[in-house]
Amino acid sequence: MNHCRDNEPTAEELMELHVEAMFTHDPNGRIRAIHEPWPGEDPAPRFFLGRTIDGTALCRFRHDVPDSLALLLKELVEDEPIMRDFQAKPKHFGSYMKLLQSGHHATGPCYCIPVQTTSTIQVVRITREHMSDHSLAGFECLASEIEYVQPCVALVHDRRIVSVCRSVRVTAKAYEAGLETLGEFRGRGYAAAVVAGWAMAVREMGALPLYSTPWENLSSQRVAGKLGLSLYGVNFTIK
Image 1 (cartoon, one colour):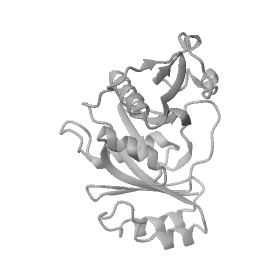
Image 2 (cartoon, rainbow, N blue to C red):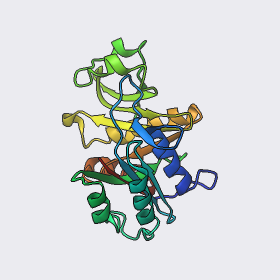
Image 3 (cartoon, rainbow, N blue to C red):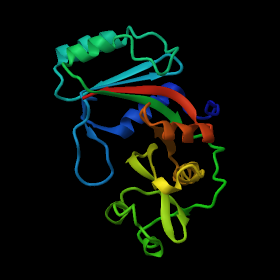
């Protein structure tokens, strides 16, 4: 993967932006809820660990995790080695799961989208004013969420929206991409095109475009490969 340009944030700074975009925080820096731009909220995971390619590690705890438990977890995080195998579980994976008495975790790569990323296929911005120009079949949710997910970029085939990249986490400094392509239109490069178009729109707004995905989402990782996205770290969460 390419590295971000010199004037881009460091991997540690990008991980900070990622966690700020992913979750709401209380005044004590504890995470509270998933930071979705539309109304309503779902609880955040109890533990977040972000490890970066430059060897740093960042952790966050949900507001209801006892201080004594948070301290134990933080001590383990400080003992995490520099990542060599990005897909490997954290060194203290078993201890994290045992301390939190959980059987559910999620992990995946985190990418920044370089400045030079551009779309090679024509894409369009989707706003409330222009939605009626296109069929939303398969993307009916856009009708209720379009104001919240700007910028929203789509590829249109015969007036039908077939691939969309929209903003699913939004802060003043960074946006996280939400990507979806209808099944019958996959494998044509459409996903990469809308991600690139979305990233350009986000940068025009003065923010950084970020892209993260679970390891098991191989199609999403293929999009990252096609675009040459810059891996800056790996996130790990426990419910």
